[in-house]
Amino acid sequence: MLRNAFRLKLLSVLVLTLTSHHTKAGVLLELYQQAITNNPTILSKQFIIDQTKAREDLAFSKLLPQITANGSYSKNQYNSISTGVQNYPGLRGVVQARQALFDLATFLRYRSAEDSTRQATAEQDAYRLELSGELLDRYLLTLEAVDKISYLQEEKNAVDMQVKRLTEMQKRQMVKITDLYEVQAYHEQLATQIIEAENEKAISLEQLREISGILPTNLDLLSVQLFPKAPNNVEQWISDAINSNPGLYALHAALDSAEHNMAASRADHLPVLSLQAIETYSDQSFDNRQISPTGNGYQVSSVNLLVNVPIYEGGRVEAGYHEASAKRQIVLQEFEKLKREIERQTRSAFLNASSGESKIDSTLRHLEAIKKTHAAKQQGYELGVNTIVDVLESQRDVYKAHIEYQKSCYDYARSLIMLRVWSGGLSVENIEEIDKWFSGH
Image (cartoon, rainbow, N blue to C red; front, side):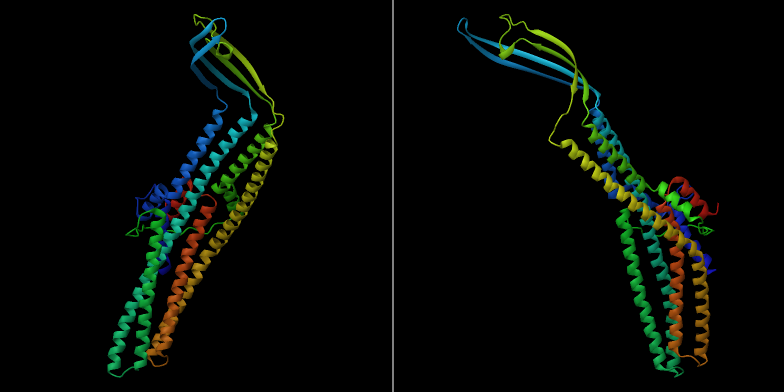
């Protein structure tokens, strides 16, 4: 009964966090929604996405038609020996349109900017996933503190009654005064532990406020029926993690971006071909000389095919290529590092989850055995066989066994959650699957 009750209590919290289709919004789900919506890091990453999209548009704009217009109006004085001094105004205007026909370097830099946008989007997804796991872990820490407080308070209430009983018995000289002192000391020890547990709970709640921006006043629980089974096929989990983890996808996009930058740097050696159209009006000739006394000007239209062939730019092109190549190597090593970390974390979570059920069973059996031992020593004390110190020691052993059992349940839940986090498996489909696990559908 103890095992089932604790599992129901624990897993109801997990369902509340991970499902949104079958349950109404509770405290934890509200925290989750607030964290996803208002977390400063997520918001800043959204601005990073906006920034990379702007850079993408900037890069693409260089491939579109470029149209410029400029004009000038001048006051001129012409002094000639034959005609004397002449004052006249001058007007000139030029409209120019230019379209790139072949500019491979600019096109590749535009593709690199596209990759950077994909990278920024994936990094936001990766942090959102990490934030979800962190929020759940902090909430579980809060629940652990709440459970510890509840257990300690029950224990303290039981010792209160024991203190009163021994006090009355000592008045009748039925027990030794040292026995009463031992129980009173244990009572104070429990009071101290409750204070520490309350502090742990307060710290956990503050951590929840840090991540979500709001401080929960209640910890809602839902009714569930089944604890999910331990996963199987570790290699499949690892394969899913490597293929689905958004952090790895972000680095893959960064690798594509670096490779496009390398290709763009190489393409800087190639000619650039563009089409140019120019419309010019002027009422002056060279040196701002007036064309005619009447001020009639001229208009010229031209279409040009421009070819720009780079020959030597002081080593700029080679330096740009080496920089892009070094950046690619950096990203490649980061990709390999994260890939190994994902495999290790996924395998560790799988192993922890696989052994979790057995650990829950063993710690429960240990707890039940310790309780029997404590009951026997309590009875032995009543018969004068054991001392009160023996009873208190066994009582402390019950508390330690209870904490170990409690921890094994939370660790099992964390292992299941971490499998999902590292595999990128908190999509809508996965949440619906987890909802079925925990809500007894």
